[in-house]
Image (tube, rainbow over all chains, first blue to last red; front, side, top):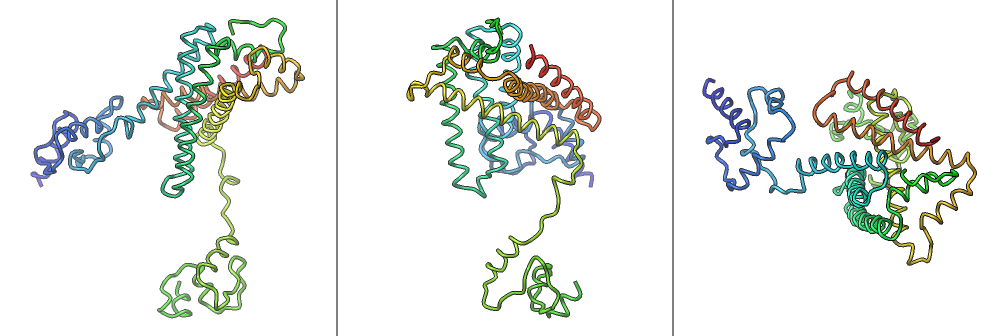
Length: 184
Length: 175
């Protein structure tokens, strides 16, 4: 009993101190072990969450079979989503409060389609799961990529051949007003 | 359960109500599954049962709550705004191919001719969706720092979101 407690205490240590418990007898390549530990420790959350969830039996991440680490999947994808969402806030706030600026318009033309793409990706994952709809999900995935690309192209065209995203939207929004405010 | 065993014997081991109805030659009429014709394969019978089976009420009886109503609204407004933005920017990008003029002057002059009540309604819908999605998005980002993840936090922040959205929508629509 005390031996088990010692092991679980040691594995608890390993989760929070970025080292691999030596008792884990798995043939996992060193780089993958390192990447595995990295994905097992998300940056924003407190590591005491594992103690609250698992108590004394914190699973050793190196012993759990993990898919190969990919910068666009898993927790990295989640963090990318939040990063893109976070970036859109100051962009939209600048457009709303300050008005038109070419750099802001250019960034909006990139970030907003990206944010829309990630949002629609979640919708597709929820309603057209690849395991149940193998053909439809693939078609919609490619269609989403195509539409996002075309949308970025359209935003670029608005920014270059027309007055820019902010001014364009401002003119449409205030079309029925006598004094068209260029800044909004 | 007991009746299934005694009536149908041990051979029919599955105890779903459907198999009970199928296997027993009872005179009781089930609405969902009419009496089985002997030659029909199980798949045909199952298909017919699936089509005629009643569905338990779900959306019509679940009490609207701050959690799921705002969550559904977040997704719906997101799809609405993003879908419209996609359609419009793609149309603008492809407009020269079809000879359509979507420059800001052309669109603004077309919209100026639209009657004001209709324009106000469209503006309210668009500004309401966009502002709700933005403010609720900030609420989501706050949750992602693991703050306010309890019942009270969800409800209070939900009220803040709704109030802010109302203010923003009013401002954007009318000013």
